[in-house]
Length: 451
Image (cartoon, rainbow, N blue to C red; front, side, top):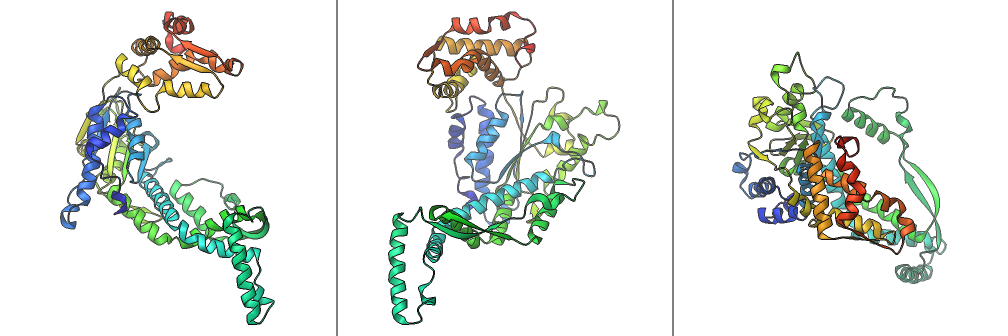
């Protein structure tokens, strides 16, 4: 099954892959790695037992900026499975203005359709090349047979066509101009007459229906053979794709290996003692989430999708609320709870240097484009980490995001004057750091200066 191609990573391999980008949070990485491996294990079972094994959904608990969303982002790139990240705070109870929770399954299905369609496009490229070549030859060499009704004309035409084929494959005709009919989709102006925006799904369905009803327009263009090859390649590949097969495969992948990352779930939890009347954006959303997470059927434009085996990973800071403030039924659908740890100075030092996309690497590469060489010694990196840790303690703790604000403040002058510093080498030392941000450290109200 194609959807299992990357789900067969071992838990250790998954953790190692995540370690390249995320420092610490081993418990969360392990929980996600085991959940992904269990998806693969279930797919190896016979049909009777496979349907009985339901995913063990995960809830990540921890302050902002310590890696919850980053784990989700990296997981989406690691596994070849439909994945969508949504914010629970964007939803409202069904019947009210706003997005309803079923839209996350529709978004997941849309993503799966794009993923499967792209796979089909990649696999059909070679098959389409032969047809593109014949169409290009037809453009270059209008059929000689029409002008010659005898066999000698046919033979001559074939030999001429083969000569042109060799030149075409050698790239000698790429600059030649030909006339080509290019089909164009109807413009979005067809929706201008609709004064009110409706439900997202209904709105998109009506747009699709109207665009399909409108006659396809074609425009005659003069293009080079090189450009014509690209246009014709897209057209021929599209003809080879069976959208019904794409829809079936996409829905199957969503049902068997789909993953939904539900961020900011703490925003829909509320203390019942403080609630007065119905809360359509909190408890109402929880009640609507319950059947989706438990397992139900959601109607999409590609057909019904069952959510029984979709893995849900929820995350939230839970500063003002706690997981027990969610309705009991929803709590029960997230049996695995992982608490992420706050980041220490040592963690900040590792975040600055170890990941493949470490901040030091990013800023050094950015300045290199201007011809400026940045150099950070160990003491400077330690000082940056210490300052970020201190600011987190004295003001709002925003985790690793604090490093971004400190680095921006530190290198503001260099970034501004970089075009004039071409060819220079700038050493970032503890003394340089203190001279740049000493005033901020002395000020008690740091939040006025650094977010």
